[in-house]
Structure formats: structure tokens, C-alpha cells
Image (tube, rainbow, N blue to C red; front, side, top):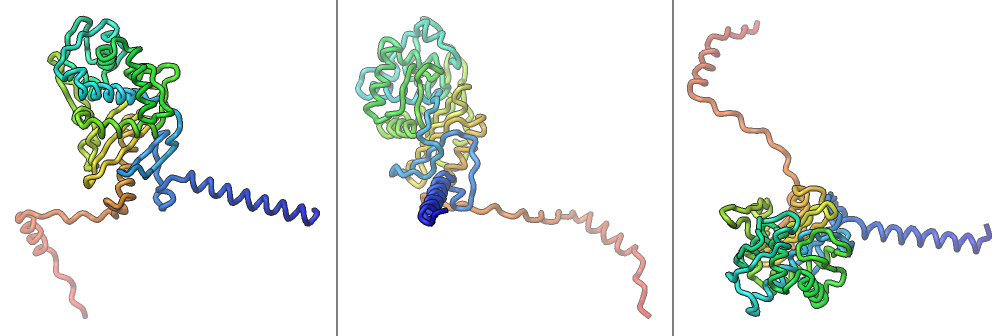
Length: 321
């Protein structure tokens, strides 16, 4: 090989190696860079510090079906109209046939019902009821289609550039999609702009027509400061979570998209929150403790007497010559 060509080839090889190494390092999860590999079932994850700094990210700009995280925008516009006085918490809402027949999950609305607006919002936030979301949309904008126009106009205002809505509830629809980045912005705006949304997203149950609608959220019991949470699921999307957590007086935002099961979505969230709090200097990640031998069982006085009696009955040891 001609020396000049050989030198050029060698430089190209070195440049390729350097660039490949840099790309691989950027793709390695944060825990792996710190010697603590993380294994998540979710397809896309984003954790933001109180100042907006990214503490953990996995495919945060990847397009994904939002499922019922769409309802965060439905709640945002509802809270906006509550604050401006366009609607009242206890205002009765007439339920249309279309709303009542919205595909499941439903809270059991019937055409012709009159339901307080507050109850519908509880249905949207806690039960993730699609019929309630449609009823809210129709009440605030006349039709769901008009409400969706408001939703998409608000995405522009809030800077959700990768998000497009086609309905108020999140069931699959052509063109509906978002990203972890946009969903983090949305729940951040919701809990910041309208604190009244926090009790809704932090609620675990409500009553409607003699039935208790409840959700079991393990993260509410764990000591991770989770106070606002919205779930979402469709076969297309997998299991999604949008979370606002407060720790040491600071707010953290977490989005988990596309986990394989509901329990894995909670596990993914717990692991990322634990890591994020350590990265923020709020707490440390403890190394797994080695199992210690259990203490010997305590013997009852009768046990000791029985052992003593046996000891007396043993033959004496032979004496040394």
C-alpha cells in the first residue's frame, strides 16, 4: 500500500473507532456509566430534576402512543376553565349517548344522566374512564371534535411540538402520538399551573352511583414522594406512567412509556426515581447488604431444663492415662 494512502487509511480507522466509542458511551444508561447497570422494560423513560435537568433518559424523543396520558390534556383544559369560571366543580353535566357508549374503560355513565363536573374529573383522573373524558370534552366545547382542536392548540402554546391528539381519552387513533419529553412538559405544566389537579391525580378512589371506583398504586405507599400519577394502557402503547414526585421540597417529573406489564411499569418508575434522587444528592444508593445469619432461637426455661437433664445423663469422658 502506498505510504500516503496507508496513513490516510489509518487516520480514518482511528477516527471511526473514536466516533464509535463516543456514540456507545452516550447510549449507555447512566447507571452503567456509574457501574450500576439498569434494566428497564419500558421503551422510553425520562426523569427531570426540579430545574429541568435530565437525570435519566432512554429514548425520550421517540414517538409513542400516549394511551390515557392524553387525559392529562383533558384535565389541563378542564382546570383552565374552572379557574376562569367557565365551569364550576358541582355544575351538572348532561351525558350524551355518544359519551355513554365510548369504548371501555368506563365508569358506567348512562345517556340522559346528570353528573357533577367534579365526579367526571375524578373519573378521568382516578378511574381513567373514557366515557367521563368524552363527557367533559362535550360539556366544555360542545363536541369532542371541537375540544380536540382546543387540545392541539394548547400543545402549541405549551411547546409540545411532537404531540398530536385525535380524541379526549387516549384510545388508539390515526395520527395520535407524543414523546416522553412532551408528556413531562404536560404534567409539569398541569401540576404547576393548576394545583387543584394534584388531589385528582393523587386520588385513589371515588364513589359513583353506589359503587367505589378505586385504583391500587404501589408508588403511593412507597417512600418516593409520588403525589400525582396518571396511568395509561393500550395494546399499542403498552403500560405508561406520568408522575410528579416531591422529595425534600423539590419536584421531580417522570415519564415511563411502553413497559411490558403494569407491575413492571411501577418497578421501572421506582428504580429510576431512586436513581434520580441519588443523582440529585438527596439520598444515596445503598449497596445490597449481605444476608446475615439469623440469631439462634430463644429457648424456653423448660427447654433448658430438659437439655440440662440430658447433659447429666451423659457418660463421663474417659480420663487420660
